[in-house]
Image 1 (tube, rainbow, N blue to C red):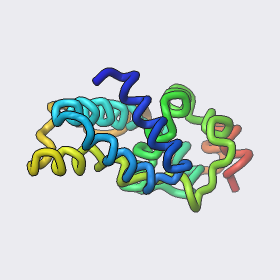
Image 2 (cartoon, rainbow, N blue to C red):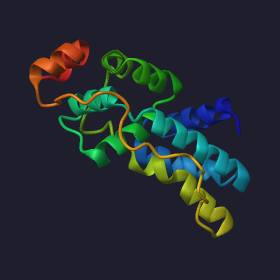
Image 3 (cartoon, rainbow, N blue to C red):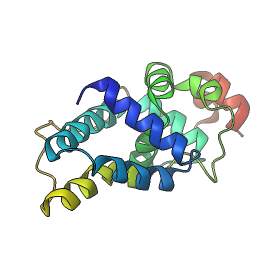
Image 4 (cartoon, helix red, strand yellow):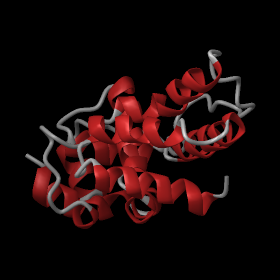
Length: 171
């Protein structure tokens, strides 16, 4: 599976689910079980690589503002959600997290920002196809987020780093 096919599956399932992350995860599993087990593994590798690429302190700070707080697990679910938004939103946010203010103008912290089940779609599809758990993907896990840490609870720091997000979601 190529990256273009990966993003096409993400876009098609998001559209089919009308943007609902839980419905998108179900639609994604339904689409993945139509592929070969090797294609599902390829999809899982592409997903995991993007998940790890988004493991950045700056993006965590943006998620913290959007969601009014973000624990380790919440940030994991946020990164799954971010991938589920498609290539344009994902790439824009990874490049410039403050751009999320414009990339997701209708963001609702009650409905958006968490998509845990998207992170398990490939695992579920592979198990349905083979009866076995998804094999190890062979990707090195980072020790921590990329970038220098900063105080997410300091309003002055957050307003300076994320002026657009702060205007919409700050105190």
